[in-house]
Length: 368
Image 1 (cartoon, one colour):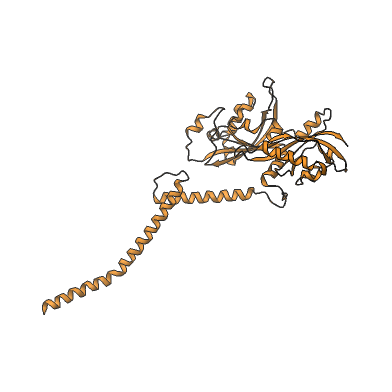
Image 2 (image 1 turned 90 degrees about the vertical axis):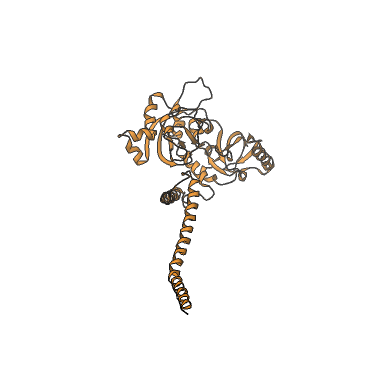
């Protein structure tokens, strides 16, 4: 009887203990589940951060802090991108952002250039060809100092080198403002290497941008050992993005050097043969001002009897990248036909090698 009573008391005590501990065990189980979920999320964040060049091993607080930094940076990039978008209310709808930017650069007698912190050119826009006589492909991987007079090299080097700016208390203000302006001379391109160098006086407006993926140049020009010694593959690098404009506009210089008039003019077209650019020599010949033809098709001005031959010429151009047209008739604004012959070539994007524009030089053969 006593043993039965004792056993029942033990069972009752165990049951009471189980009932008493169940809420705590449940909470522990829920907390463990939350911790496991949190650890899984932390692990996913760590994996994503490693893909952006962060260390393989990081504690939780470091992972969260770097995630916050990454999101803040993405927010800044998004804001900068929106600020750089070209407003549709003053950009013609038939032009892309790239085409409109190219037209604006040409209208301002300017071009875009991007440099590493060492002064190596990693990008330059096509408009440099008409302004300085250099092909973009000839400039990329060269050092900008190679195109300056020797007397200007040290000063420009100081202005464009962030590690020099940071150690120079006088020049440090430039980097704080992230934009500098200065004028210097740049060498013009020449077909004859024996000709003495001619220089163009230009104005730089430079922005200092921070990027993690800057194209690696092959470094044909001089290389700064200091900048590369402190640069890792994952840290942000300073890239200098500048607009360069001629101090004396190209049009004024051409007016000052009037020679015997040549009956030719140039234009730029999209791959579908729509006008994107018309130079100042065209209006006296065809009667149209540039804004009157931009966005219209070149075929709108050709004689019906010449369309088939011109279409074949267009196909040949798209196949081989350059060529010469047949003789054809072009209708001027004064409703007069003139005979033209066109030399043309396709320009290609210097990074992805995709065709961008068609550049044409039209020669007047005779008036009808």
